[in-house]
Image (cartoon, rainbow, N blue to C red; front, side, top):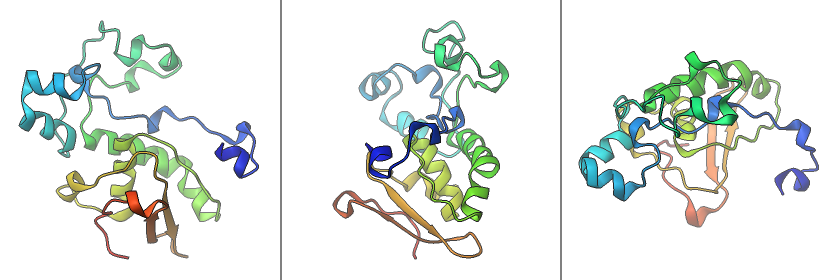
Length: 174
Protein backbone atom coordinates (compact mmCIF):
# COMPACT_ATOMS: atom_id res chain seq x y z
CA UNK A 1 0.00 0.00 0.00
CA UNK A 2 2.84 2.36 0.82
CA UNK A 3 4.60 1.72 -2.48
CA UNK A 4 1.38 2.30 -4.39
CA UNK A 5 0.69 5.51 -2.48
CA UNK A 6 4.15 6.93 -3.19
CA UNK A 7 4.13 5.58 -6.75
CA UNK A 8 7.14 3.26 -6.38
CA UNK A 9 7.61 -0.31 -7.55
CA UNK A 10 8.76 -3.25 -5.45
CA UNK A 11 12.21 -3.15 -7.07
CA UNK A 12 13.00 -0.16 -4.87
CA UNK A 13 12.76 -2.34 -1.75
CA UNK A 14 15.96 -3.55 -0.12
CA UNK A 15 15.53 -6.44 2.30
CA UNK A 16 18.24 -6.59 4.93
CA UNK A 17 18.47 -9.31 7.56
CA UNK A 18 20.64 -6.88 9.57
CA UNK A 19 17.45 -4.97 10.41
CA UNK A 20 15.67 -8.08 11.71
CA UNK A 21 14.46 -8.37 15.27
CA UNK A 22 16.85 -9.09 18.08
CA UNK A 23 17.55 -12.82 18.55
CA UNK A 24 16.14 -13.78 21.94
CA UNK A 25 18.12 -17.01 22.32
CA UNK A 26 16.38 -19.73 24.34
CA UNK A 27 13.35 -17.44 24.78
CA UNK A 28 12.62 -17.77 21.04
CA UNK A 29 9.25 -19.37 20.40
CA UNK A 30 7.88 -18.57 23.87
CA UNK A 31 5.26 -15.95 24.51
CA UNK A 32 5.72 -13.40 27.30
CA UNK A 33 3.60 -15.36 29.82
CA UNK A 34 5.55 -18.58 29.14
CA UNK A 35 8.82 -16.69 29.61
CA UNK A 36 7.64 -15.20 32.89
CA UNK A 37 6.64 -18.66 34.22
CA UNK A 38 10.16 -19.96 33.62
CA UNK A 39 12.26 -16.90 34.54
CA UNK A 40 9.97 -14.53 36.45
CA UNK A 41 8.84 -11.04 35.47
CA UNK A 42 11.96 -9.25 36.72
CA UNK A 43 14.39 -11.42 34.74
CA UNK A 44 12.27 -11.17 31.56
CA UNK A 45 12.19 -7.39 31.93
CA UNK A 46 15.99 -7.42 32.19
CA UNK A 47 16.28 -9.62 29.07
CA UNK A 48 13.85 -7.46 27.11
CA UNK A 49 14.99 -3.99 28.15
CA UNK A 50 18.58 -4.04 29.37
CA UNK A 51 21.39 -2.80 27.16
CA UNK A 52 23.85 -5.65 27.43
CA UNK A 53 22.15 -8.71 28.93
CA UNK A 54 21.30 -11.48 26.49
CA UNK A 55 19.25 -14.59 27.22
CA UNK A 56 21.01 -17.97 27.16
CA UNK A 57 21.87 -19.13 23.62
CA UNK A 58 19.38 -21.08 21.56
CA UNK A 59 20.57 -24.54 20.54
CA UNK A 60 21.47 -24.75 16.87
CA UNK A 61 19.35 -27.94 16.78
CA UNK A 62 16.26 -25.97 17.77
CA UNK A 63 13.89 -25.53 14.77
CA UNK A 64 13.46 -21.85 15.73
CA UNK A 65 17.18 -21.15 15.37
CA UNK A 66 17.73 -18.96 12.27
CA UNK A 67 20.21 -21.42 10.77
CA UNK A 68 17.25 -23.83 10.49
CA UNK A 69 14.96 -21.30 8.78
CA UNK A 70 14.93 -21.10 5.00
CA UNK A 71 15.01 -17.30 4.68
CA UNK A 72 18.41 -17.26 6.43
CA UNK A 73 20.00 -19.81 4.08
CA UNK A 74 22.08 -17.21 2.19
CA UNK A 75 23.43 -15.49 5.30
CA UNK A 76 26.89 -16.61 6.44
CA UNK A 77 26.42 -18.92 9.43
CA UNK A 78 29.10 -17.08 11.43
CA UNK A 79 26.98 -13.89 11.27
CA UNK A 80 23.89 -15.55 12.76
CA UNK A 81 23.87 -15.22 16.55
CA UNK A 82 22.61 -17.78 19.05
CA UNK A 83 21.32 -14.95 21.28
CA UNK A 84 21.59 -11.16 21.36
CA UNK A 85 21.44 -8.28 23.79
CA UNK A 86 20.22 -4.89 22.60
CA UNK A 87 23.91 -3.92 22.40
CA UNK A 88 24.53 -6.77 19.91
CA UNK A 89 21.47 -5.73 17.92
CA UNK A 90 22.70 -2.12 17.96
CA UNK A 91 26.07 -3.15 16.52
CA UNK A 92 24.38 -5.10 13.71
CA UNK A 93 21.79 -2.43 12.87
CA UNK A 94 24.12 0.58 13.12
CA UNK A 95 26.76 -1.14 11.00
CA UNK A 96 24.14 -1.69 8.28
CA UNK A 97 22.86 1.88 8.65
CA UNK A 98 26.37 3.34 8.35
CA UNK A 99 27.23 1.29 5.26
CA UNK A 100 23.91 1.36 3.41
CA UNK A 101 21.61 4.15 4.55
CA UNK A 102 23.60 7.09 5.87
CA UNK A 103 24.98 8.06 2.45
CA UNK A 104 21.43 8.14 1.07
CA UNK A 105 20.45 10.63 3.75
CA UNK A 106 23.53 12.71 2.93
CA UNK A 107 22.33 12.70 -0.69
CA UNK A 108 18.96 14.03 0.56
CA UNK A 109 17.03 10.85 -0.26
CA UNK A 110 13.87 10.02 1.63
CA UNK A 111 14.23 6.63 3.28
CA UNK A 112 11.51 4.40 4.70
CA UNK A 113 12.73 1.77 7.13
CA UNK A 114 10.31 -0.93 8.17
CA UNK A 115 11.78 -3.08 10.92
CA UNK A 116 11.14 -4.67 14.30
CA UNK A 117 10.88 -2.84 17.61
CA UNK A 118 14.35 -3.64 18.94
CA UNK A 119 16.01 -2.91 15.60
CA UNK A 120 14.28 0.46 15.55
CA UNK A 121 15.18 1.10 19.20
CA UNK A 122 18.81 0.42 18.32
CA UNK A 123 18.67 2.82 15.38
CA UNK A 124 16.93 5.50 17.46
CA UNK A 125 19.63 5.10 20.12
CA UNK A 126 22.21 6.05 17.52
CA UNK A 127 20.25 8.80 15.78
CA UNK A 128 18.99 10.46 18.98
CA UNK A 129 22.20 9.80 20.95
CA UNK A 130 20.36 8.02 23.76
CA UNK A 131 22.48 6.70 26.61
CA UNK A 132 22.86 3.00 27.40
CA UNK A 133 20.86 3.53 30.59
CA UNK A 134 18.02 5.56 29.05
CA UNK A 135 17.48 3.28 26.04
CA UNK A 136 15.53 0.82 28.21
CA UNK A 137 12.80 3.48 28.52
CA UNK A 138 12.32 4.00 24.77
CA UNK A 139 9.04 2.49 23.57
CA UNK A 140 8.41 1.99 19.84
CA UNK A 141 4.68 1.82 19.04
CA UNK A 142 3.80 -0.80 16.43
CA UNK A 143 2.64 0.51 13.07
CA UNK A 144 3.08 4.20 13.83
CA UNK A 145 5.59 5.77 11.44
CA UNK A 146 8.27 7.91 13.02
CA UNK A 147 9.39 10.83 10.86
CA UNK A 148 13.00 11.84 11.45
CA UNK A 149 14.41 15.03 9.94
CA UNK A 150 18.10 15.81 9.49
CA UNK A 151 19.84 19.18 9.28
CA UNK A 152 22.57 20.13 6.80
CA UNK A 153 25.17 18.48 9.09
CA UNK A 154 23.18 15.20 8.94
CA UNK A 155 22.21 15.43 12.58
CA UNK A 156 18.64 14.82 13.70
CA UNK A 157 16.85 18.08 14.39
CA UNK A 158 13.29 16.79 14.63
CA UNK A 159 11.37 13.57 15.11
CA UNK A 160 7.68 12.86 15.55
CA UNK A 161 5.14 10.08 15.16
CA UNK A 162 2.51 10.47 12.45
CA UNK A 163 -0.29 9.28 14.73
CA UNK A 164 0.08 11.65 17.67
CA UNK A 165 -2.59 9.79 19.67
CA UNK A 166 -0.36 6.67 19.69
CA UNK A 167 3.00 8.44 19.98
CA UNK A 168 5.54 7.59 22.66
CA UNK A 169 8.22 9.66 24.36
CA UNK A 170 11.35 9.78 22.16
CA UNK A 171 13.50 10.67 25.21
CA UNK A 172 15.00 13.65 23.39
CA UNK A 173 14.11 17.33 23.13
CA UNK A 174 13.88 19.01 19.75
